[in-house]
Image (cartoon, rainbow, N blue to C red):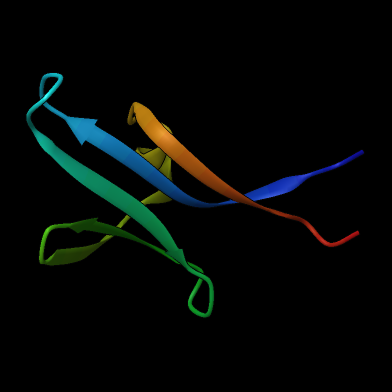
Length: 64
């Protein structure tokens, strides 16, 4: 079976046509998730990413 790893998750906060975007990005070298919003970057828990409503998700194919 084909499996993928989540690398990034982009969320939109606010109403259509306004609001802000947040990105959750996996720092693969550290296996740490980061939350990026404008100029703010902070560590976040992977459990919180699954609770957010995703606008776009980015995956990579797991090696066989």
